[in-house]
Length: 359
Image 1 (cartoon, rainbow, N blue to C red):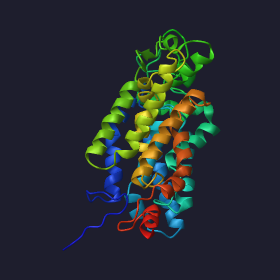
Image 2 (tube, rainbow, N blue to C red):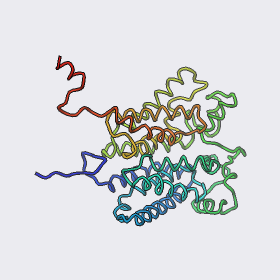
Image 3 (cartoon, rainbow, N blue to C red):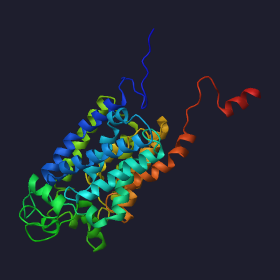
Image 4 (cartoon, rainbow, N blue to C red):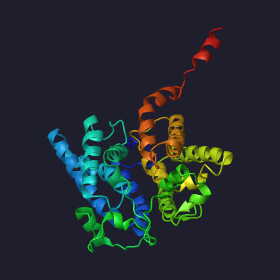
């Protein structure tokens, strides 16, 4: 009888690391397409920059370490990190933002700890937090949906502004962020947070032009597309349901509790689930098999805690979207979670059962 052994993450369907990473990248394509449709083609430019930087950085470091860089590069883990960085930053951010973030993710967070399988933190999210703290202006310059923008833009404009700071017609990023009424638009999460500080209710803030009912224009479609990709990953058993579902449940239940307390001061769970990077985080970031919990109960705790932290930071923290911060916080807690959620070894009784037997 022959047995097939698969490297972690262990699955019933035998796939190597490269196949798993590629399937995750393919599942993200609907979300990337929606980002391009609503917010411009800049995400494709950043995806190319991040991919080239990630592969070059990983190959260089592995060569310096006298490792087989060809095999490591072919596993596509660097490309997946590059993809997550590219879709997390504003589409028209300058090119060097992507380069710095990708080098930090691969060179410091991943390779400094020994490479794939040894990193303590999610590389893409650690890089995102580093960039957000270091370059807050560039990292928060999201454009309004193209349907609301005063100035239209295409792929050539995206390339031009990413590398030069201006579109082919000479418009800056600040001018592109202005809507048809001459108002600089923020993201839905930031708009709600700002509105509350100005004494407005949530319902009053949702009346702004960037909202379409209970969610932001474009952001619902982007999150729905990433949800579709996540369901594909679940159906193909590339990821397990424990962490994504528990994260969304933790976020939804926490948001529901406060929404029922005061709907004027707290946004609905629907708004939180389909704003920012909620679905991207649940199915493509939280499910990282290296930096997440490894036990079944631990995955449920890990995911649910991330969902709760996302709500806390969104509501009372200094940053509108909180996926990256919540993930890094819980990455630090993984050893403790795994320690207390290890399953009982088969054939062994618990300590209480042993004591009862001796009596």
